[in-house]
Image (cartoon, rainbow, N blue to C red; front, side, top):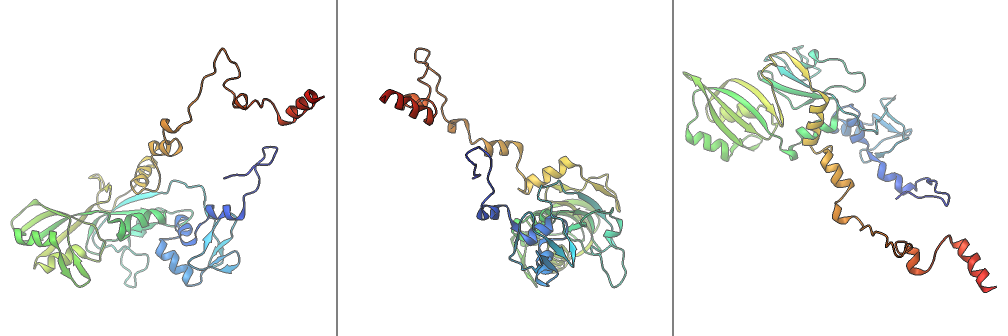
Length: 319
């Protein structure tokens, strides 16, 4: 609650009030486009981040005016939220989703436009032999909302198998299959046609495990001949986006994605928050024309005018 002086001027906030405007350091760095939250936590833990001249800790919080450096370089944290950049890319087979590869294979990052501040963060990954939709953003918080397991964001794939799934196999995929890293299952699977031994299926999973779809099919004794990711959460790959093509989402679509993630409120939600409802507003009493002062709270108590003026009036009456 802001404080005001007797002249109506706002006073400086108390130190405990400034804490309300603080943010976790690793989250602020991720929002600034330095990387994902996990990467920022590891960066802080390794001692590469300083806060106001001191080596930062993972639990530290940062607020406006603090000096943050990463490897000695000053990082400017944007406290006024800006619309992040979001880019979709149709990954081809034979590309890796990594900036560094000892084998020197082509990387999806080679095709992305330059970013002035921060860098592109990949939302999820696709293995070397898988093609389809990849999403990149400059906002680490957005990447976290779409990839963290607790949010269970849907990933939809088109998979071509050598052979067909029978009813028992499809049921086992829906109920769960025991893999090396635990039980995995699909939320939905539907046949999508095919020719001869090559049969297409569309399936939906909510995890981002390494090679999960391929391992599920291998467990059933089937071979995946082609795998394409066609949707990630609310973002579907448009048919116009051919292999190797990229497209940056316009601001209105980015805002819709942020609302879907719960990171910003819609206009209706903002109005509801700012204005809880007509029924909660104080009732406005209209003045009685026969009693001009009946609408003033001072009239009910007999106290009219400024307190200093009342004292003068009372003093005059006593005299």
